[in-house]
Image (cartoon, rainbow, N blue to C red):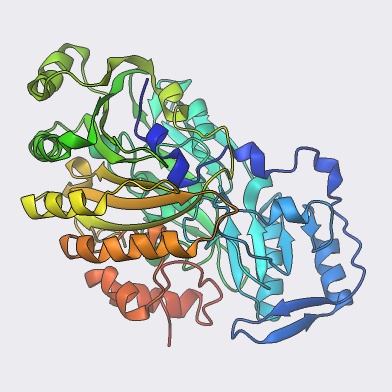
Length: 498
C-alpha cells in the first residue's frame, strides 16, 4: 500500500529508532572514567575547558552513561537522522530517569553550556545536537503505560510514537501522533503534533493532560491545568524553550483498530487538476478523514508523481460516500483504499535505510490552495538527476481549527495545510547546490504561506520567530524570563529574553 511517507523517505531523513541506539548497552559504562579535561564551547560561542574533576563528578552522579569524544559509542550517539547535520557535542548524557536529567541540566547551567535535547533525532534543522555543548539523549528514557479505565497514557519523555500507539491501541484506545513510528514523542508534542487523527481529536498537544518538566534551574516541576498553568500553556506549542519534558499524560480516545487507508497515484502531468480537486475535496472532508497530497520527483526521474494519501477512521458505512468524489479524477496509475490495522499503518512509512539520504526542507502554513499557488508549484517542482524534490501538503483544519488561538502557545489554528518543500541527496555529496535550489524556489512559494511549524523552523531570526508566535508571544516571553532567563534552552524556535 502506498502512503504519504513512502514517497518522503528519501527527503525526510526518517530512520528506525534502533539504528541510532547502542545495540549492546554494555559498551557504554554508566561510570565513565574521564581521562582529562574537555574542550567545550560556551553559550556565547567562546572556547572553554571543562575540568576533568568536574566532568568525573557529573559522571559519578549519573545512573545512565556519560559519553565523551573518543568513547566507543560517541560517534553513534552524536548522530541525528539527517546526515547533512554533522555536529560534535562536548559531552553526551543518556539519562535513565529524572535525576539524571536534572544533574545534566545543572552541570550545563553551571558551565555555561548550550543544551541540545535528542529524543527521536528527527529535527530537520539539527536542533537536537550541537557543537561543543551538551547533548541530552533521551533514548534510554522510554516507557509507556496505559490505564484503560481512565483512558490515560503515561509516557516517558524519550519515548517514540510507535510505542505509544502499540500500547494504547491494544486497549482499543488512541491519541494523536505523527505518521512515522520512530518520531520522538517530546519534540512532536511540544511543537504541535500533526497526524492521521488530528482533524478528529486535535493536535497531539491538545491531548496533553499534564507533564513533568526539568527547567533551567534543574528542578522538576509538574504542569497541568491545576499546577504551573503558565508552563502547561507555554510548552504546548513553544517546543523546548522551557526545559526537558520527562513525562507526559495523554487523553486517549476509543477507536476501532481497523481504518480505511491508502493512496492514489497520478503522473506529474496531472498536478494542476489533482491539486484543484484536492483543494475542494480536503476543505469539505469530514473530521474523520485525513487527506494529504505529495508531489515530486525522485533523483533522475522525469515523469514525477502526484499522490493523494488518505486515512479514514470514521464509521465504515460512510466510506463509500466519503471516497466517492475521487472517482471524478479518473483511473490512477496505482493505488487504492483498503481496511488496514492502524498501528501497522503508523509504521508503514518507517525507513529501513537509516541516514541514507541527506535533506533540507522549508515549510509554512497555508489557508487556501489558489490557482496562483498551483502555478508556483508547477514551476518549483522540477526534476534533477542528483536530488529528489517533493512538496507535501499535510492537511489541518477540523478539530485543530476549533481550538482558540490563545488556548495554547500554538497560534496557527487558522491553517488548513502545512506545506513542506524538501530536497534530498546522497550524504557524501556537497549540500550547497541543493540547499541553494530549494531556497530559491521557496522565495516564490513563501508569499502563499502565513507562519510556520516550529518543529520545522530553520531560520533563527528573532524577528521572524517572534512574529510566528503571533498574539501569544508576549505571554511566552514572560514565561521564558521566569523559567529560563539565561536562555540555556535555545536550540528551538527560540524566545530570546534579550
